[in-house]
Image (cartoon, rainbow, N blue to C red; front, side, top):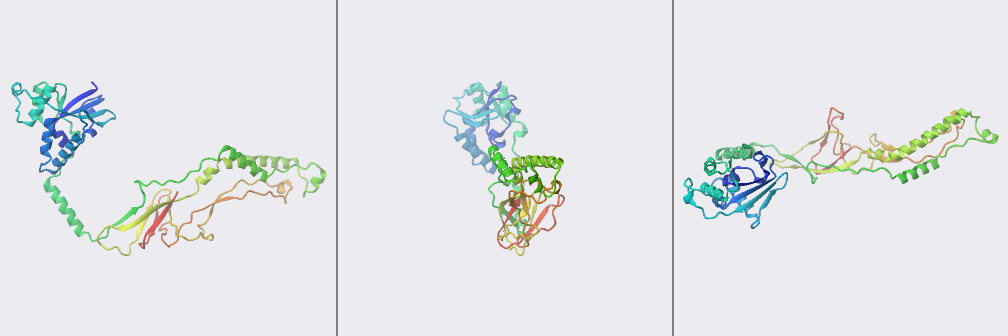
Length: 388
């Protein structure tokens, strides 16, 4: 049977986890649909518990009543749709025939629920109390005790709660140290950094770039007459021309490969991504002369934009070259020492410039076994970038 209909008592709402989160298949293997019925007798009992002296019982009873109040008229609320359906509905009993139920007391809320189940005749009882389960079983009703996994964690006693609160107050009074917090200006947790990834150049554009590159570096033609040969520094052998032809064919292939993978070269260049942050003092003690150590692990590099123009003389200001292959030149082996071809200008991607002592400095030269570190002064806000 894949569909089950059950009645639950008030303690299921109070002592167990939320109905929609329980693993009901532990009770009903192969369950496809579970219809949970709340008797009007249970609603009356919850209404009394909402004013109970115990805080957890009060909160759980009020939450249960709010859940029940949201059930549409003459319909059911859906608590879960996957991997099986759970619905919650209200059922109103008829006038009970107490004369036929000699084991039940009409003044006992649990007995009134059992009487409702007897007259319904189509549902099982889920209760953590042995009394109503025993009586329901006596009248032929399937009675089930929920597993321990359904129960909420044990409630903290009033004494333990008071001790915990007092201990927390004492610790706060004894703590004379400032509390520093790093506040990140990112909307997500964990932080997700997004850098653009260039797609491959369209095929038609690749062909056009290759055509222009080869046109700018044309292949030498073999001299056909004695006057052409005499204009060179020396005569060249057929082997020279075979070598030159092979090198130019290789140059053509390398140009095509370079254009096809050009996006990969640009994607591999470091890119600085902003992570705005603020170091704040969350404690009551004044924070003075503080140094903040920022540690990065993995392939990231720490970088600070100090607003200055790049210094081309610094060692860190090297360029990221994306050069096209050079055409073969007719040098000495071919006898064309003075001939050169015009090359396409290199595309240069500025390499990230690492900062000086203005805001951050490397404490230790980073390597695979030593994470990267930097120091931050406490003069105002700073921003750092992660280069990947």
